[in-house]
Image (tube, rainbow, N blue to C red):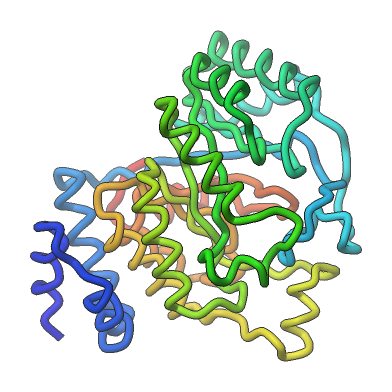
Length: 323
């Protein structure tokens, strides 16, 4: 397969949907990783930097939405800690610790959206984080209206709101809110001049066409950063039981790596960030993902413990990258 033919098409902005299908069907994992790496080096001026970010699960559980993968949904019976919004002091203490390793720090709350009272507490926390740390601050607060987005714009933060999957497949993932509500939040944010991080989860039972369509939607929405996750099935969630019954097939490590590479190929000038599920699905292969990504989430995830940050930094350096 002439991989460099596709490299030239990407650089010239001429890559087509047909080309992407051909790459998936005819290219092997290493073809796509090599192509993604070549594209990454071109758009980053040959930088070897892997940007590190982390999150705090600032409000956990009791979410009314029915996303099939989520351990925080009230529709599932999972063994997780549930709590209201953490005190500002606790969030700031954790952020200061993570600043030793990371450039970005995100405050994440469970739920469809955030109520006014908790929103004001998050705003107060952001102001203090900006005073006391040098971290770039992100927030993941669900579906937001224009007034809240305007306030976040004034604070200079980046918002995060995942599409999760393609528009066509979304109803098989969630029925308590719509794909369009997510798209509307992202469009409002971009119109106001906010930076947006959005992405999805590979391995929800979707086809590779759904993954391509999701990535194309992110490109059309002009998001600044793409957060890619790989499903880590959690006992008690609907998807865990669907997998257990054989109704959904788990994504393979090879498929996951190819899908990550497609992220860079389809959004070459955007930040591709690998987040949850890499430990569970890729294991010793996760070092290969560094060829296709620009950033890595480190530390703990929402309800799953991450691995040692020192181990991640060692992996990055062993692969010849810097962080």
